[in-house]
Image (cartoon, rainbow over all chains, first blue to last red; front, side, top):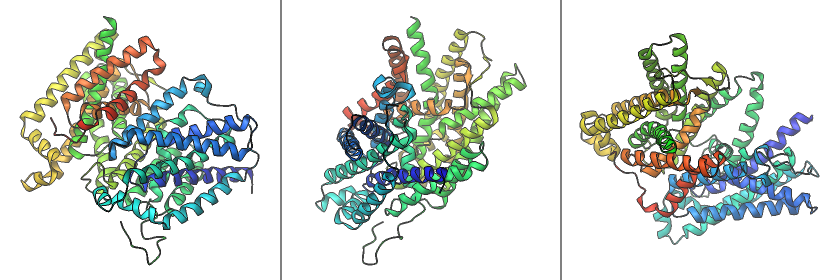
Length: 277
Length: 283
């Protein structure tokens, strides 16, 4: 396998992690729009810890924990808002973080955070992706997933069944942020640079689009979406100037013909399981 | 004194772009994230026709409005209508609309980069040569448009129908309003407003670039949400407040933090005054 393919495969593995993090919050019916910030925080913390001499896995863990804390705090701040307004509030947090990062020399300013040591091995993204997929596979079958589905469908109904909505959503946001921040740590060590742009709306949206295009009914959807949308710009490389134009057009076409994502709700559900749409 | 005029001018730019956004939001209950790109298309259409036929003010104005209406219609017909009715901004289907309008805005933005290049171009000051004259024209235009939109919504039959749809779509359908037609009318009207906004704003700032749409689109979103969804007077007030806040930040903290002001305002208002927010009537 040549270097080019390896690089794309690494990016696809990280995109999978990002999409799975977004899946966790989307399955709780939350449109959490500042994953770019979480990813960047995780990346910068991981890079700082790793360049201070600690082992790579410890650094990744520290980044993940920092991202999870940030995600939890943002959720608690916005938890009184519902639906669309929650999305707009989190989006504003992301953009505010971008402006702050752009003007803070500690985060590298406009040039980006560059104080990064090279990653010890290229296997980490793939290994972590494997672990994340297994965890999500287990998560999809456990009672908490069912509770989240009911919350997503109808909050009043969920509350009347005795489900603690706030706690479930907090758990979903924190675990999703942890995974996204891990991916941030991997990203900064693979690329060696983190621009302030990554804090902002564009990146957050890209992460959500992976999951939404793939489909959020099961964990298979986000993985497919992430791999497809990472590969797509490369496949369209034959026409450099028209590349992003095609990307946008494909996005529109996919959403119009499969509004619930490429992988719909039927796929991947065992026969005994109740289908709640 | 300079700074007061300056903040009024900035406030007017946000007011101009927020009006049409507010209308389409109120009637369709959809966040059309391609709205900024409709604005951008209109700005390029005006710049192009001003270069092709310099001095023909009527031609420039009509080309911007027609281009905006065409872009708005194509966004609606290609990216919003096929996804079906969205009755509630919080429904999962609204997610699909957000993604498809983003896809369409990527298409429009890259088409503009392809056709005109990624660098900012000069936009002719066709209304007045100096900065002061163009600013005055923009303010006059903003006030006229605010008044016109207000009158159109309050004192015409079409405005009455639009307000009925914004208030309760099902009930409007039951009383014999052809909601399909009137939604199309709202799309054309609000896109045309984007066209007028593009004309007035670009002749004041004097440049046009493919990325101008996303910049102003964000600010419009903030203004519309803080001012109250569907509330025109609230939007006007918030646009002026935001304009002065941004100018004040530029003066005291430096222009680097200017773009953060809108978002800080939005977070503060959403978190501390969140009881005010629900889909209101189109006022």
